[in-house]
Image (cartoon, rainbow, N blue to C red; front, side, top):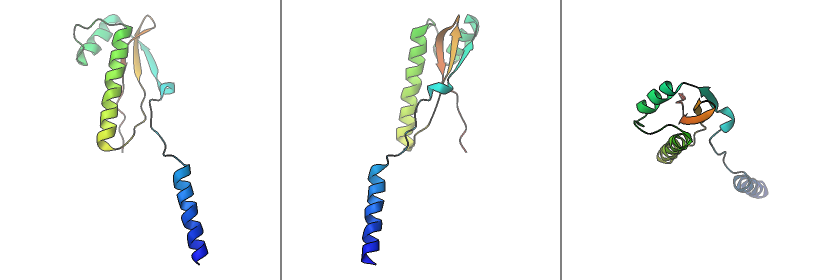
Length: 106
């Protein structure tokens, strides 16, 4: 009986140290690109607090990074990891704004 207990303990420890937990991440393969007019992109950027900031690839990278930082803070605070993706607003094929859509979790 002692042998079986020791064997189970060793197997349990081996499993714990061998397998790492699944990591949540930014899932770029689910990104969506939506072509919009400049007026629509400007309106949405203003709603997001980016008034008077010129739209372009710099705006896209700033909006992406701000949301990534916010997601990281939420994950750290709640001690969870969340998979997420972005909707990229484009003008003439150039991304100008990144939006991380909320996904309800039940």
